[in-house]
Length: 389
Image (cartoon, rainbow, N blue to C red; front, side, top):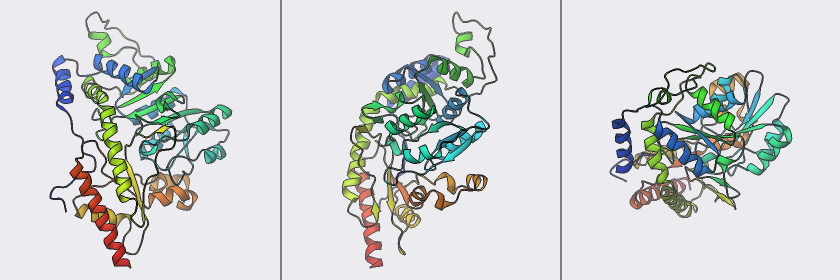
């Protein structure tokens, strides 16, 4: 057993990242200004998107994306139940109805054939989620959207580096929304980004993100700025401050190095745990795609001796932190009761939701940390198998 607890996803910052934030604090501009614009340009370039708008969360990005598209009461948005609650909450907040369709049992991503079947005259958009950084089948989803006249708003919270057919997912569909939460592949502490190919959508995103004003404080009060401004429409307070963007700018410089480290750990887990009975491994990336390796999601086949919750408990006793990605949306009382969804209505998502747990996967794990995780998982599974026998 490890002597110190290994946290599931504790971030570590380099001195350059810390210094960048300190420089932003000393600059006198703490809210949205030049560093946020710099981050937008660098991020847009990385994901090959024409326009990028920095916000205070991916949740804000998903919500504003639907506002820009005019989605609201009476409309439907098709999405997956196998995601963090924020994905579906944003649809609910617009007044539209989230329509949940089942997932592919191996990848955990939304099943395009079921998306097509779920389309109604009220459907306005599809919201795919690239679970753990594995890209969805974007060929099928783009075809469906094109043929049915629907928008695609991607939840790319796990998918900064993800590519489908050698194309970054951020340049596909209509709008793509990213997260820079503390545990994400690039962090700003709290933060998000929306990318799009349309200038008019990007302009309206900026306006909605800052109360509906046509000028930021930087535009109004920096040297040569004009203090007068107009309110275009009632907006929100979703802008990213420069202190956060400073951290993002430095983290983006390290993204490929950190992706390589996560890839190495992900493959070690798969290679060294794949022979254990009852323990399911995530499939290898599909051909001509790039996985972001944001999470390593396992499944455990329940037995009288060992189920998912017992596995997490035993790993905790070994001082190994874990996560659950995800408790599906239809497990939650609000959505289950409001939309009358039963577990058997979404069998693949239900099957995964009852079995999944995630192992630590950050670029900050040492080789010894990875050894400890592998040793603990093998010890627990083999002990309970022997005991059950």
